[in-house]
Image 1 (tube, helix red, strand yellow):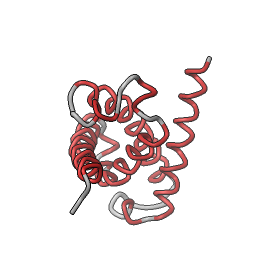
Image 2 (cartoon, rainbow, N blue to C red):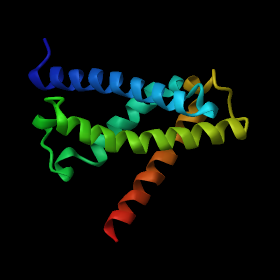
Image 3 (cartoon, one colour):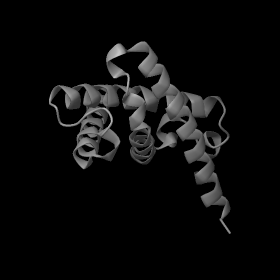
Length: 134
């Protein structure tokens, strides 16, 4: 049996996965050079989890309870996170293909790709923090 907390975290993961998949599909449709970026949806989901851990909702005036109600507060928080995630995946995707580190089809299975994505995400998040502090 799952605890209430475990169940709610599972619901958050499922909801975030569905939203991430939808957003990556939109990103692909809008950018000819990102036609396979949707294959990185599990990376995007992990980046959302990292964002949730590094930028807790409370820092943006949202309680975890409000986030888990999946209303406007979730949408606002998710949109902010997804802007960062989408840009990170686009940057990493373009760099990886340019450097011939992998092919679009091998990206989700390549540890080097995940490391590049994670490193780029951390850099981008740090840059945002520096800009906000000024």
